[in-house]
Image 1 (spheres, helix red, strand yellow):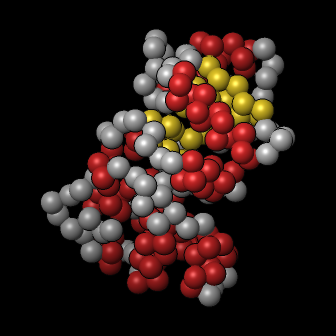
Image 2 (cartoon, helix red, strand yellow):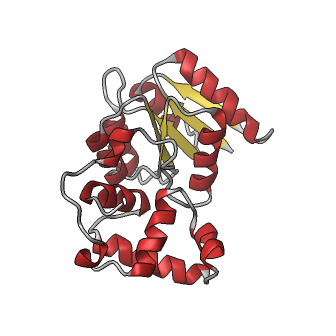
Length: 209
């Protein structure tokens, strides 16, 4: 399993590499301190199963790198690793295709939890670890029913906010995983977003959560 870390803070990047190596002996981690260095690795023929990137970088930023990946049709899961507490910036990253968010204050356990969720195909931003500013606090509160969210879907939305996968939600509610998937799809449609993480963030912004 090849993992790329794109971060210009060498001490943090090396600490993150040590955490990632806990995933097993099959893990190989490369570090790039700029978008140009990351692109050089890709140009050399290297492929990655997971990419973790900071958004604020010297020269081209993380968003520029995500655009390049999109243009090259590179579909490795992306996790934003950032010290930023700018909620709008994180929402923008999610809209650009990031599947997870790791704040640089996360401990190793929280970081690995997000990585495992993302590698399982889930979008993950655990409520217990996310900075308060990601919640997009709103002065107005929107009721779930006013945007077409049923009682069951609201229940599922609250589990999503806590970082539960579809399988985990199904187990908690004693329903089929396919039923959870269908409800999640309806939630994404009701909130006019593109994925699970954006769904939770929009619900928080509206005051539904």
